[in-house]
Length: 200
Image (cartoon, rainbow, N blue to C red):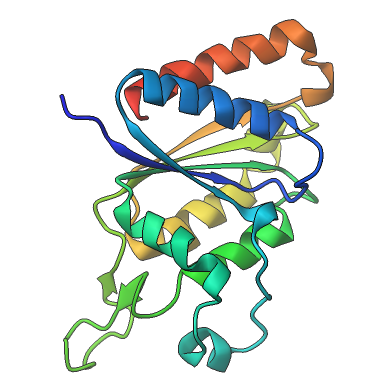
């Protein structure tokens, strides 16, 4: 079977100190590359871009030059993997700002008709791609999933990834990260390598 084209999106906003998200992403990449998959990276914390502040800017301003490679890699990829810590119940603001910037009209979605007629969001520009979302958190993952109903994750899957045609989207939730210890981290690294080998 031919290798898959995989884009790893590192969404941890701290570019200085390595965190669990970085360790997990590296393990996933190791597994994927060992299985012959082609891996590219987008490290959001290392990209210099402004936040969007208006609908006008989102629809008509130019994509910041620092994000062109990331957007090109999203078009190239067959499978995307997003890594981020849960902050205040949601993805970090920098990752949200990144997604708002790259998921522009004309790229992430287009009008149904080439002449601009019909539903302006009718054509999903990233259809045919799958994704996995890997989220680390301090609380037990079951609490986030069942008590809080993983509301922010479901919003990401439905209102961002699904909106532009990415499906299916699978989830890996890693809770109680402060109590994992070395053995727990190694266990999750192993799971990431398995997922990477499978391009899942």
